[in-house]
Image (tube, rainbow over all chains, first blue to last red; front, side, top):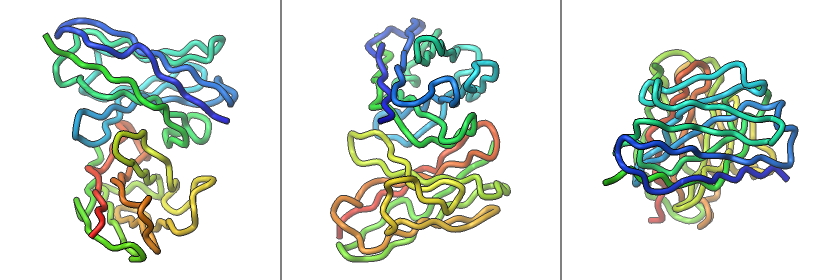
Length: 120
Length: 107
């Protein structure tokens, strides 16, 4: 059974940093692309970033480019996102999502989400 | 960036009804279109990919169609568990974009 488990969420001050992790199991981790998708309170889904299975290719939304860095450690079956210079508008539940087919960014499985709150 | 526009934004229906949700892309995306269901407080659930392909385990009451810029999600014989918010997503090009969501409510 495919499972994705996010961790690392919490309360951080504006301008601060946070790193989220997503541990994957039940599939060949290095074969599939992974994305971070966030959802601000009461709002819709917003794609944040995607990384290919090998980690060589990365993509970012303009809203986080230059502040967030996506990475993965295939030896640990773990996806990361390092979030720097956090702003109030980054407050959201962050989901990791697995590609259905190699690096194609259509997602067949989602984690349960990690809440990030940016506030003083 | 490709904008995805869903209509309606909200929809009231009764148990047993059949409903259709529309998603329009601001430019052609071939069939690189997915649909997701999200219940309150839960993670999204994948329903359909490549515009019309049912994700494994999803009941056949859900169906999708379309290509290019216009797409539809149809849900037949609504049951209480189907009342949720539905999102479309294009994966033709980066940045990946979602529709604003359609909230399906019980009448």
